[in-house]
Image (cartoon, rainbow, N blue to C red; front, side, top):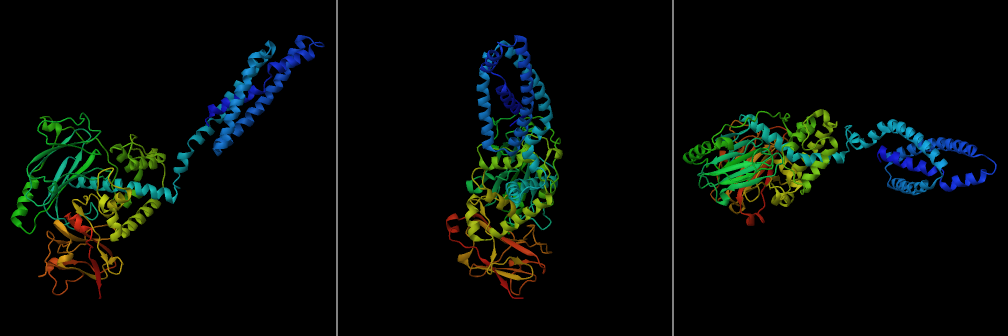
Length: 577
């Protein structure tokens, strides 16, 4: 209840205590025979002065009570105050019938009461402001509950992961509105993203859509698998083009914009084949291209096609100059996602909120906004750390890391993976929070199951893979992954999700990373510190003997979804040392 409302309640309560017409007339009729009118008025004034003093005491009592009502916020007491207000209003209606003498006294009492109330309202204003700001103050002292922090982390993971990924890649390739045709398979020096693949080439464009739409002039590709993925800081994945859909057989021009792009509302542009609205101002447009690494001539042709892609702004396309985009300051990225959770979570999320489209009808969008609102983070605010609540960064980091390890453990279960696979890496409205958290942790910016699936490799004994042991994965011809394009198995360290460093730069087994089937069409893949005797080089994933937890992940491109329903990923068998 605000201070103004408390004042109104008090006024009505005081007025209810003042003499009514009946009371005044009774006094006059009783005393008139023995006393003069002047004496009656004097006594009335004296009585009124006493009433004023009583009113003052009542005001102070009412204010004290109002403070109690405001701080306790008990619904029943507020209702009682409302009823008292209504009763007081009814009582004051009789004042219009008071005698002239009593009316004059009443006016004097009102003036005195107003003076008292003005001074009281001024005195309680700081108290009112404190009460009205309590919800923020309680959440600004760094003492969020564990449940509050878990909710905050789970709803933030998709944004934190993608902020780190997109901004690191932009910095690495020379800034925004640039494209990097990376025509070599990735190695262990890549640490901008967790769990990258080693079986496709990436053509990565980092795009700033704030000032101008951007046009991608896309060539045809001589590859049996190509896809284009577009995603912003919200980590919702869109696949506007894919060989699975019959695309990339001819050159095309695609225009991209966001809801905040200046001077453009989605209208057609002559010569443009496709128009795509992104959910954020800063997006990655990533092409995955099977390089046919076992065919050097085809590999070179594909690399040249990648280099021919062009990025231009709409202003440039129409013959003008590109608009400057160097007027924005990005909060620092973290070496890992945990670093952001600890050091500058609120600053990063404020920046993300200012450059992301939130749907008022999307429950997950509204839930993340609600989680941050009490902390001073809302769309449209300046990214000023001074405006934010104070949170315990180390506690947030610990919970983020706990959630990370739990997710990696859970999705190692085939049952858990199968449950979320249909909604992994999907557009907004077609996925779930659990899937977003899982994909943001296990490997951001993947693609949906129609394009690829990512089963986890588990051990026969259920224990995590560890570099203190060697392992073998066996598959017969009938047990091979059901992929219409191609498949691979890649090895990482568990916690950070990076390739295991080795001189051979061998991180995966598959058609592009290298593999050799046996005469029956099956394969044995060895994870070992030394190459086992008789095992082909192509089928050996080297490790360094030490206490390091490992993770291994299959990738099946354009999977046969019908066969996938009954296919079981093989398990790694620990070998005796």
